[in-house]
Image (tube, rainbow, N blue to C red):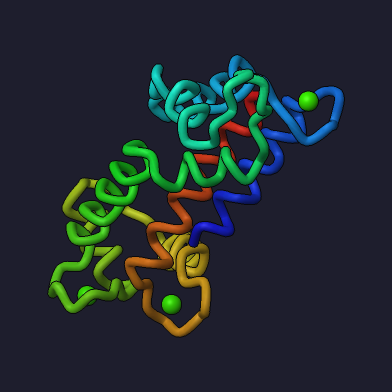
Amino acid sequence: MLTIIENFLHKSYEATDRDQDGYLNFADFAKILSLFEIELLANYPIQRTYATHDINYNAGYTVEELILYVEHSEKLRNLKEEYKNLFEEIDKNHDGRILIDEIRRDWIEKGIFLNDQSLEAIFKGFDLDSDGKITVGEYTSILLRHYFQSRVKDM
Ligand SMILES: [Ca+2]
Ligand SMILES: [Ca+2]
Ligand SMILES: [Ca+2]
């Protein structure tokens, strides 16, 4: 699931690292975080300086550090939680997987009527391993991909 996010973090990092030396300053690092609406810990530069004993405050921010930061962010945790809740709303019989009929039921409840063809296309988009069921992992990773992808496009 996280490799999906990493892909977009790499893209945004490369676009921001204009001199392509593999390092960003804090302002650029913060710019990427704000692109994804990830909370910026104001004391983070001081924390990391302390942790790495970088007394000169000059260590650049690498893409690995960006990934680590995002992986541990509250934003990512909240997004996963939000998507999990959505999943549970659709998983009508609460067996941990969504079948196509559950999606149909959910949409009808919301007043949306789709023909079988459209429904099937949507379902296939989520059923990554094509086993006829959508797991919470599949559902969450698709929505996370969408979240990060749509913001990378705005760069
Ligand atoms: Ca650079
Ligand atoms: Ca179910
Ligand atoms: Ca599946």
